[in-house]
Length: 328
Image 1 (cartoon, rainbow, N blue to C red):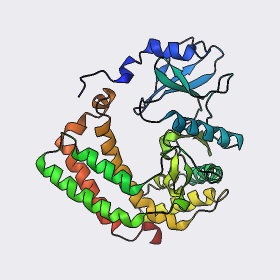
Image 2 (image 1 turned 90 degrees about the horizontal axis):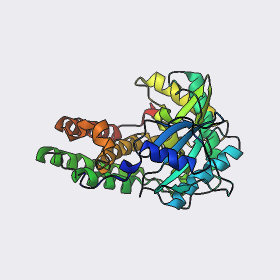
Image 3 (image 1 turned 30 degrees about the vertical axis):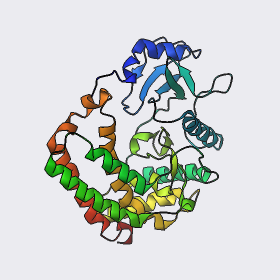
Image 4 (image 1 turned 180 degrees about the horizontal axis):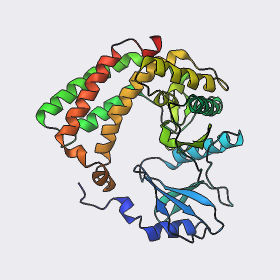
């Protein structure tokens, strides 16, 4: 699967430095590679002591127009006082730069740590931050970025996994069966286009940084049109009902400082969880030609991984047949 070099193989440290310095920066030290797989992301500081995050976009994933919408949305959010990191722009106003055969953007590095999802003050602050993002996001639509499509995305994930070479006949049959059942179950959880707003799209705690009860939201690489709950459900991690409802209450109380939340969207939490589980394995399959993936995720070729994944999907099928937790 590695007959031709992956484009990122050409992104040597020297090329990274050369690309960034071609934009007018001088780097007294070598950039530090951050833990990112979809793109290549580096932390650096310039000769003025400013700290930056440089993102080299994965070739072929997004169009220039889609990336520019990400950047422009960040600019609008920042202008409204929302805690995000807008892209650096050169004297000509460009935020997306074509350098050394790659597309590159620079963002100011925001310090901080991930929130604690057991801390009510943190949950309130996260809800308040996402509510502020969505209050701006609902004012207009993305024209070029994707829309969250349960039907299409589940079907795409299913086809990718079934084409993977690592499932044996039994696993392929079991996966095909549960994926078909999930696909059918998720048909009942469609939403109208009117429910979709501009959202960050991949709102896990690794993309939230702060201290005390003040946080900022970073990495809008997956920004999309989707229901608001797409940016909220990953904060609800508690296993016990009382704790789960506490998390929900704090998040929504913070959220509604800026925008009313439609409680009917809570019924989408388990469908969205199902979609994320399916897409994650499909993503690993789709990116296997990138040498970083076999190194970071070697278990993907092991039958035990696929047995566990199938069991997880079977569990989700049962969960989808139950009453939503928010009704408990």
